Image 1 (cartoon, rainbow, N blue to C red):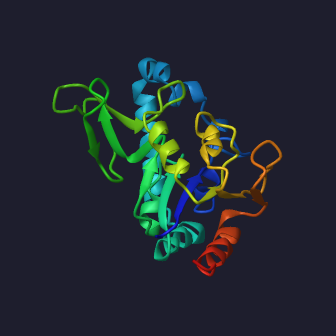
Image 2: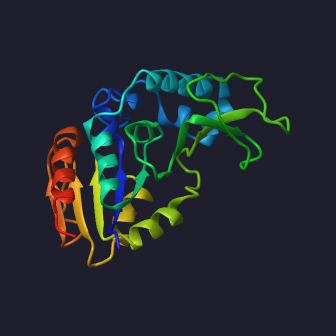
Length: 231
């Protein structure tokens, strides 16, 4: 039976493809206030600003390419059953070749009804504007989980980690909840690798291997190691 790998990724893996992170120096929050563009209250105050913000992010994403880390993770599927759980809203894991991806915080390439949550539409890298409506007449909004909103797929993510033999945590500070708490769902027998230049495993698991390197440098080597391990 093939072993299972659960991969939790954060903004750091996409930063190497040129996508700005929210918290690092020079990140998006230095240009925008979080409460203005990533909260439901911000949407109610100024939906045009929110729509424009995500239109810009979508345009930026169209010009980005998956990097060595994204592409290497797809290679794991040669030997393992792999589930990618990402906090990122980009599509770089899909374009990197991974088959099973759970987007905790939504997807830039989709929009949904502002009133009927179940009405979700793929728009690729196109823009939306005020007056674009769902089939039931409500304004379309970004298909993004904003701060303060429920993370509807968090329980699904926890179940994937609970059955993992190996877990990789890549490019995340493990400071944003509830996603940061997912590492604690790893079984005691699960080997966990934490890849991030600022990684600190002191507050997490005893069986944690910390790799303080960028995703683009460390993940290809880690994937090679896992692919070469005996079954």
